[in-house]
Length: 122
Image 1 (tube, rainbow, N blue to C red):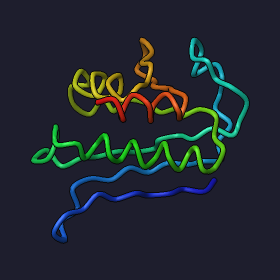
Image 2 (cartoon, one colour; image 1 turned 180 degrees about the vertical axis):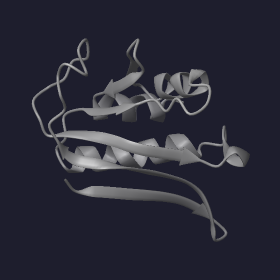
Image 3 (tube, rainbow, N blue to C red; image 1 turned 120 degrees about the vertical axis):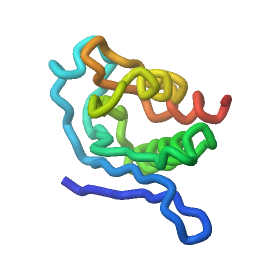
């Protein structure tokens, strides 16, 4: 698939990044319980925001940009999985704030327009 990376930077410093694909057909069993429309789907492969700028809108900006790309590419759904390399609690809160549903096994999913709407109302 086509992997796309978006980077947030200021004054020559990289503050965060998100990457993923926009031509996926997500496994409906993994996203059981989510309202997954027909493909194409977008999938967030990886996201990182530098600790020093968390809670400053960098992460929501990256999600906004990713969701905008999903809309531009006519994706009907954005999926992903929460990273468990450290406490996933704050990540769950972040993705819910961005308009995603979070499953008990920490998959995330949302409709691109719902995500953009949630972020624009923050």
